[in-house]
Image (tube, rainbow, N blue to C red):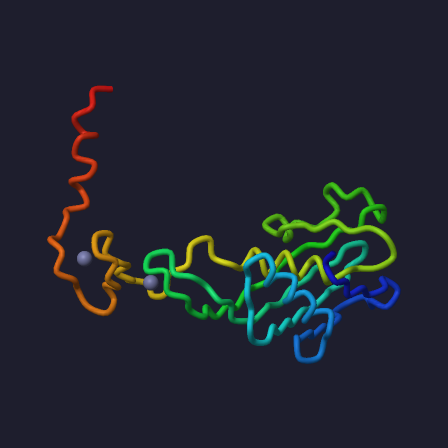
Length: 181
Ligand SMILES: [Zn+2]
Ligand SMILES: [Zn+2]
């Protein structure tokens, strides 16, 4: 289960409410990091979360960012490396049952993702977990122009070229152009 960090709606004042969480201070966030590590998102250092929750009856807006470094495996050369992430959070929060949810959030929120929540409190646990997962790259590379490993001899081409003959990558698909559709 996602560790929870619940804030009672009654404690949230109209206007801006600042929240700061970090793995150094917050045990629930450390638990969350352990949970994420089990799913493959290993964050060995700290996670810092800065959020501004704005209450504009009947809605809530959540803005801020998450900052951490996540261990990644390069999609090209399979080296592991640490990827710094600064993820911007921008969410509309609609309380189910407060109002007709559809069309409640004002015009400016049209581009916002909207999270729905119910009950008497707002739980930061699943929100932060989801945002961490959203921030992870689908395909990470150790450097923008990673040369990868040689398919033939397995040499790490970032450390220098190997002696294998160069294969023209276009060649592999040359037959395709001759296919009659
Ligand atoms: Zn690489
Ligand atoms: Zn090679």
